[in-house]
Length: 61
Image (cartoon, rainbow, N blue to C red; front, side, top):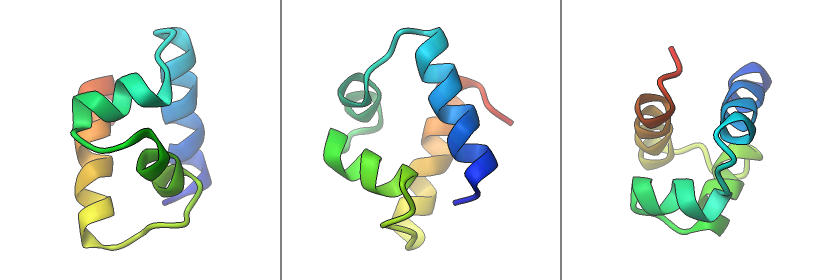
């Protein structure tokens, strides 16, 4: 994942006062797994699908 997208996601989470755990629950994954994705530790096909879901939830283009 690009650093720019990571920053956009984190900024939107802050704006909505949303935790990793809350966002992860909406996506259907654990907070730890979401953190791994955002930190670039997971980047497979499934992780990319989760990122697309996160972008839809947070309305990020």
